[in-house]
Amino acid sequence: MRQVLLIVDVQSTFSPPEWLVDGLRSFSAGIPTIASVELHDEQATPFQRQLGWHPAAEDENLVEADKVFVKHGYGPTRETLDYIKQLNVERVLVCGIQTDTCVLAAGFALFDAGLCPTLVTDLTVGSSLDRSGQLGIDLWKHHFGQVTTRAEVLAELDAARG
Image (cartoon, rainbow, N blue to C red; front, side, top):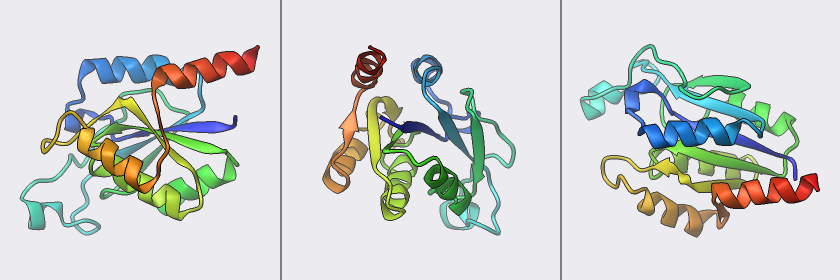
């Protein structure tokens, strides 16, 4: 199956747990990987004005990726979506930080772009509202249906190799 891994906002600003960073590093080694990094630009997204908080103006992705896209806000950029569409993949594996906000926003954008977003449930962390990520997982199942785990994807890759 042609697929790409999209890692959402695994960067210092959001203090990802070490198990997530380590898990993503080993998982992404065998799959084409892209990542997003959320940077603050108040002119693009009014985090400070509306929420009294904002991500860092400079930060970097903590997991090696083939391509990294900067975004200013919750969802992926048009450039990110166009890049993924050019890859002609059957599904986009999505994981990362804030299952119930930024990861979910990526799911909506991918779905609306005609792609097949699939959440990797054990490689995601929720927001401060629900650190377990279960709220985001439940919303993902409701809206997109497609969820998987790291073990299921690795088993599929092993079976495809032969």
